[in-house]
Every structure is written in structure tokens, then in C-alpha cells.
Length: 230
Image 1: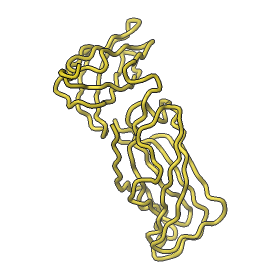
Image 2: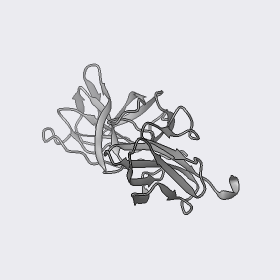
Image 3: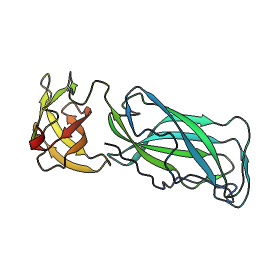
Image 4: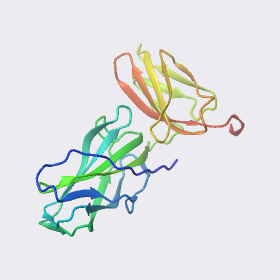
């Protein structure tokens, strides 16, 4: 279930004071829990790095946002931290910034399933040259075996080894279904189907995005298991 990856993420630079370039550590945040229950919180530490030849002296802001893995765009800011007073970072040095994430699920914030989290520093007198990106798997407090998305759809059986049934509610129909693996990669897509054959998927946990005829997107998670384990 657990999956973490870190990549460099280019951001727009601020033109002033080009000799100061702030970025994030390339390492996994200290204290990060990569599988959390919706509605809970966790604290972790990130490192802000001065890549430039000049000393950084300024107030520092650190922002966290959710990256939409379906269309690759940065979503809403879900956390923000501002240092108290002026921070000094020597060239090629770094400082620790503690962050606390409250995983409240919302259409514009964290979602059940995979969220790609982007953390980046901002300061008026420095360029932002890279940021930290990692995956967090957010699970429903009610448990993976009890997916009930009423009043829109029901999804069963779950876990499943072959077929997954999507049962619309109140005359709503299914227009499109997407299934993504734990890295956010699209592994299955279909239109106008309510019975999905997942036999060829590798056993594991997947996120599912169901677009309905009323244009709502219902997201949840499914478990694909080997037939012999049933």
C-alpha cells in the first residue's frame, strides 16, 4: 500500500535577487506517514535549501498543495507556514521547517485514495528553483470493505478478483470510469459501463474515479485480489 517518491518540480521564479535560489531537500520529509486516515493529522519536517552563492535573509513562507493526478495541475493550497521574523540561510546550507497536515477530505483538497503533495518555499527576495513532491495514501475511516457512495452509486464486491459492479442510484447513469494504481498511473478506462472486468489488474489497492451523467465525479478505492485468496 505504501508508496513514496520524490521529484524535482519546477516553479515560476521571482526575477529579483537572482543570486539567491531557494529549494527543497531531495529527501523524504522526516516524520512523514504515507498512509493516513481521512480526518486525522500528521506532523513532518521539510528542509529549505539555499542553492545560491549569497546568504538568504528574509521572512520565509512554505506552502503545501495537492496535485491533481488526473490532469497534472496544481490544486488548492491546503497548508501554509510563515516563519517568525527574518531567517538566515547561508549559501549551500538549509534550515528545518515543521509542518502539520490536517487531512480533511474535500473536492478541492485531500481526496480518498492517492494525493500527490507539493511543498515549496516562497520569499520576495529569492527565486524558487524546485520543490518537494510526495504521495500520501488517504483511506476512508469506515474501512475498505464497505464502500457505499450513496446517494450516487454503490460499488461491489470489494475486494474483487474479476468483476466490479457500479450500481447507480436515482436514475443516474455512469458515463466514464477511470482506475489508477498507487503511483497515480491510469491503468483502466471505459465509458458507459457498469460492470468492470479487473481480472488483468495486478493484485493491490487502486483508486477509482466514476463520472456520472450529472457530471459529478465520485472517487473511492478498490482492492484487486487473486482469485485463490477469496
